[in-house]
Length: 165
Image (cartoon, rainbow, N blue to C red):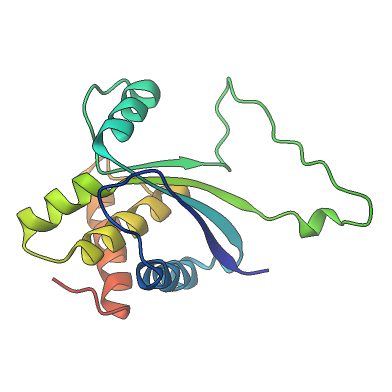
């Protein structure tokens, strides 16, 4: 098995093209390689500001849109249920993908930030995607040291695929 993206587009403001998905897949491979992750599945959903606002309020209690949300499948909170996979006849448990989690990106907010920072939408989406991926692996940015570590990892991956500022 390999590291792969399963994606969905739930917004209509911007067309999601195959070359963008290929770029994000390349980012996933580079980030996975850097973190020693060579297999698993990341669910990526593109949304607009209205939808990410709803999700941010529902899951984080924050009443405004944000740029990216990550929901790791390998985290277990005290109120969460264990995930049980049903294996079809003739299928092995090893064939069930290791789902790392969900990344939800507001393309609307990404475009606003790209304009604000003076770089391309692709660069902003790449940044948000690798940022979300690192959150799936347990990285956070609650203090200066952890934020600097995440930023360094993100910029290193983006440089490898040619998405520099």
